[in-house]
Image (cartoon, rainbow over all chains, first blue to last red; front, top):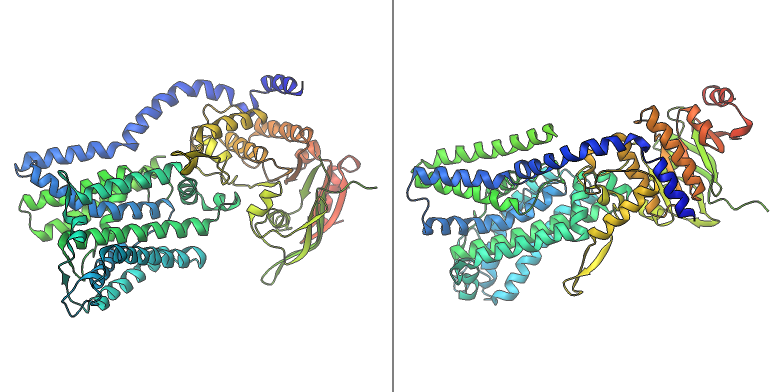
Length: 351
Length: 249
């Protein structure tokens, strides 16, 4: 009975807040606008990637070859894994500059634990499985450390992770006594250097991680909360979401993924160098932003960052193939990062 | 016997450093009551309500809900006791869709992958979001629309629908009409009357006395962090309340 009354008054007051006309007249336009927005704004990066591949292929016949494309994919797989973590941090509205050093330290630590016959190693000759577990735990611990001081203590994320970046690079030097360690056990080398069928193992691992974290971000409560905290931390707090916990988890995921990246890189090179992964933090941020993850937090689609990674690696490889001097490649990469951030800013302004 | 107040705040004080924002303030709301909380800027209205919503802990004082003493350490505690606050900025996440905002922080889940894990139940959230919007008699084109694409009134509606669907016993509104036009304000006041019929108490913080006299049962006046008056709306006039706000007598 009450329901009926309610629905009657509902019809009567359907125009509440003057919405009815707005909704009806807006519906058609909105639909068209939405389709355009989805293609142009949400997935444009794949079109850009296609364009870049086309241009580079037309400039040099060496670009569009199986060997080169496989090479780009292999390079992309390591950066891609790191980019997942960086993107999660950016989505939560923060930054992680320490991922490059975490990559370096992870490789160094893995080598120190496993490698034999070199004075700089621990001499424990650990089996790869416990060694990998230790390295992953250290990665998560680094994220927990960053996340704790950023979320709970309220320190600036940029400077906190910059300090971690310097500290962890130093730790990598300490662990390996400043030397390069090489010659990992074969099962470890398989991760970064092996293939499953025709596909490099590292690429399979990267794709698997993309799928897992895409699922977490889009289907799990914690993923939703990462987007909410990045979009409006005050609203998140007012609705009972623990912003601190969410930010800490985001950093822990980033640390974990950077450690995976470090394992893959050292495994592929079959050596751990103290400078491994340096500069990767900026590549990771660039790939995330090129892939449409907003620096303002809370916006972006994780899967698109694969395209971001491929854009960066294609340009880099393409320039090498075109015999562009290394210094100019550096300048170009800086310019690409600049363009990506410019685009991100303009996108926010357009909205 | 007197009715048990749904909310009773006793001798609440709040200091921010040396600033005494509230001093020994009592505040109570009875079931189905619309209480207006008025006072000049800095009188302590928002601070008092943020204490009730669990945003700040009080420096001193006690809070009782339906006669039971509570200690809120976070907004989540207050929400779990049926207290919903609608902030001036509405606390909506622009990057999330309407359904997601109505279920912000209390997303529904369902089992997935053969019970192996739980995922967000988007479909159920969308259905219930429609229901909540219907209950506040709001029509929004799609519950999948991102909140950033909505008008001020629509955003307000989302915030209210959220409070209602969270089974609020009491809804606190901080200057809810601030961003609304004349027509939308009128509709908001109708909605508040409607909430009262649905047995939800409302605390209405506002400077606009004409709105207050249209919907409220009782007016409480704060000045300089103290409660200086408590009047039945029908027994007083706008002129008297204005005088209390400005001169304190």
